[in-house]
Image (cartoon, rainbow over all chains, first blue to last red; front, top):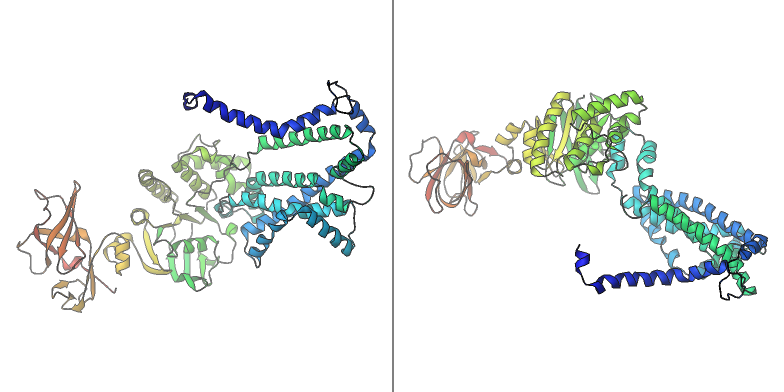
Length: 265
Length: 350
């Protein structure tokens, strides 16, 4: 009621502002998705609906392989980083040990160090240790990169949990493992799911490190797109991007529906 | 049901003694109140009995069997936390059933027990709700039911009513006492609320700075405090200090306060033990008497609270709780004589 009593301009302005922001965020993506369905190779109008670029994509082995690599690396990265990071966050939240403060402090700088520098140092380090280049090196790099994000996200969730809940469970006779499985794990699940999404996104998005660590002939989608653009842009890239956007947005919306981030359901 | 023996238990954090050589023997089936200011060590003792804190020295035994190396989940305790600590992702029913569920009890048996518990704490029909849909008092009952369903040997309560408002707290006190008596479970609870401790407990212990100050039945501790701290912690007290002489305390002003126990450097008298009369009224020779002037008179219906300035106590006013029996309370500025029996005067060490 109170919102309606304010002047028309006052209620109209915020919506317009929000609309502008959303347009700024989504318009380029919308244009790209539209062009994926446009027949013209040179982005010419009028718009003529055609699936020619999706058909071309189906023939483009390099792009498809790169997409496949990107997806499995992101998934495996999410699994490994989420598992390791959740265990680390749990240890930070529940146990006292030597060097804990220092370790927690050292988690954050990698988030702020430019990727170019991290990529260079990884390249040198992997070369020096014999790990070399290739998808395994990319995966290793992505896990290292995702870990701080996972630890921070899961840690924030653990922080917000009442520490007496596991204690209460123990007093009723639950073993430490039962306490973890029945109480702690379900309560931190929203944080773990959010962290896994983060880890997936960090890996799926990653260009610089993947570019540095890719062996000739094998690469991930961002690297392949970059290479494709340098050779001359084709709307096949729009087609693959459209598929990826639809899938990843669907995934995020699905998760967001089931877990309200930040809140306590 | 069990006897609980805490034998000379201590816990140090760095150089600070959270608990310093405390021995308490909790008898089977008693309702025992651990009382003390925050940071006194009362919660440390409770958490030690629960198994969350290991004692540095000393031992804890249930029915003569040492349990201080047994992990929490195998001690056979039930505990209610101040925050209730209900599992937010489970229904009331699943919260209560949890202790049986983790033991692998048959579902049919669990259902029967849960129904019994819901009945006991008067929450029939609330089983399918989530904790957040309940009021504070209801959550408290669920926590109690969850703690009792496993037939624990000892029930531990950590400030169980602290989060409730005054009225609800009084209701729950009555209910808690009733449930405890019906089940007959040894119950140890921590509180900083002296009234709650007096109302609920069969015995209480006053703890301060990690040390046991006094232990006994509520009436005994109230009537015969062993220290000024114990007296002040359990209600109000007038404290006379001076020299031990002439069968009581010889004050700096030369007046003598006679005490039942004889010579004492410090004597305590509870405010409700004092009689206030108009100045010059005859007083029996064996009673203590002191002259003063009323500086504050608060009328609250059934009783009147006086603050009286006396030479004997100097700046500290003498506190009196008087029954409202006379025609009119004394007004501020009235010269009065205060008298009381030496039998009500408790000699303490400090």
